[in-house]
Length: 185
Image (cartoon, rainbow, N blue to C red):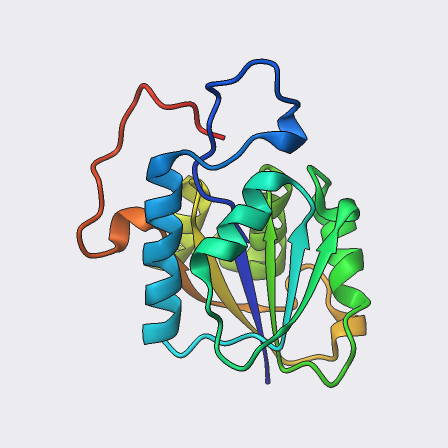
């Protein structure tokens, strides 16, 4: 059984309108949330062999904030993960080496949320379980989903993974209350 972890970058800053979207950094709240998510990942024993991370500044800073990751994973920053579709993300995952038992993909919405729902599958998403309801409700910044994957990476497809966990920064001890005035990205 393989493990797939999908992590949306933490909350980013919109303070400098001169910055391109690709260059936007995390804001202070995002950094704190990512540090907390990293601690939660370590507590849960989530230690990927490979980390695929968008080349955007906010995703790279999210990776930095969740570190250290046990086992010294191979880290691959990828331009192809920046604001792409779920089908493109799936294609990237199909290219993962077969010896990898666990992969962490750090990316962006809407592609990441769409990928998570597609992997869970239409039948599961039509169900009424608490994880599925939670996933269907949205994919806030800093959210992590965990999937079990039985097939080889190259055969990964929609409906080809079992949703095991949905964890957002709001679930973590000492979480900050949601701030409706913050932009969602």
